[in-house]
Image (cartoon, rainbow, N blue to C red; front, side):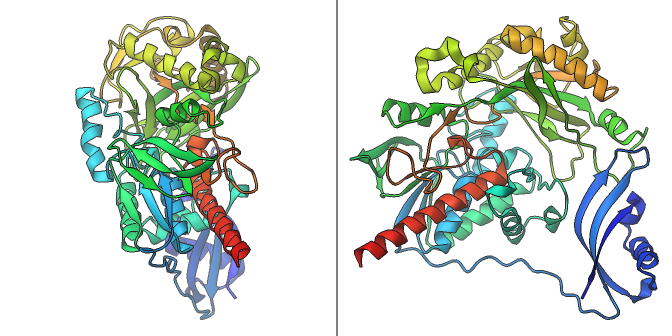
Length: 526
């Protein structure tokens, strides 16, 4: 049997197979020549001390113990061309993994996506970056793969109690992701590599008899006697099925409005909101690694920070080392920011959402909108930012230290945000209580991370799409909507996930619940 070891080694040893074998040989008192293979099971960086170490969990094969490299195979998907149909609205991670799970169960997914396929989306992303034109159906949030496709591809999740994280990661590897995501403490695919993986998943769905409809926006949900009957699209076409997974993402405001208009039960949900802060990556490296030069053996440094300020949590969100800031508006007349990194994380800047937790009471000025109060609060800030930035996709910006001093920045250097910036006193974007918390919070951040609070850092506003402002309530045991039979609210848009992995897990679970429901129905009719 291979021997498992927990090691703490230098970056040089971790990066060199021969040095690692030599180190392990000394630990287990065997010659390095006797070590046939070393499998790295887990890897993380410990930068808490001045001397940086790499934590490794390894499996050591020695004395001619056989080693066989693991090959990750796709499940044996069934041909479901003539099987019972299940509508899946939304081709983000929740919808895609729901569709794959339905195929495993012998059911035919009809996957409906308002946006374009991954390649078609690129033209619309260029339009928003260069021409400041927002396509309401195809943008950084809408289209094949959802927001995650062009939002970094971070696969770390704390939601491990929700389901089998390893299964999702292994499926990603089987579809072409690097096996490193199974090892690294904070796995990441990269915006440049995700599109091909997403495309391969779609092609598998079609190959197995599933149906994928792009540029098809749902405009109505057909309900009779509190049971789902199907959907109507913007083309006036009806697609019928009595089981439907609603996985539209956290930005599908028209779907929230549709549900509210049809008196299908939804409720306001708290979320977090703030700014996206950009630093030179070299500065974050020097803070986190306590060095003047990072070198090639360490990855660009991330950071994670949380503070309690004014009775609220203020924290970093979706931190992107070696990444860029992107314009993520989904409608004309609003400005929204987000961040992403390529697989190598080799850009010169680091960015992170710095957000504050909101409370339902914050939405009281919008109480007349009922369950959509949080959404309207969110929308008002995005629209205000658009006006302040000259009614373009330029973003209101301010140097961080200037912001804490309530001082308009005389100049804003070029940042990674392609549409450009407009120097604004950030207090004009946010309600007074949020502005005050942000100012105090950045001062506190600066005490914890020496060098973080600096005018080299540029704040971009707002970071507002951290999670859905609406929850679509469902039964915790069946995942079915509390009011409408056959409707399965799913993923981030329904308020039950936060990121690619948890959304994918939720999609699979909804599919499994549908399979279980149909099996019970079949058993009861026998």
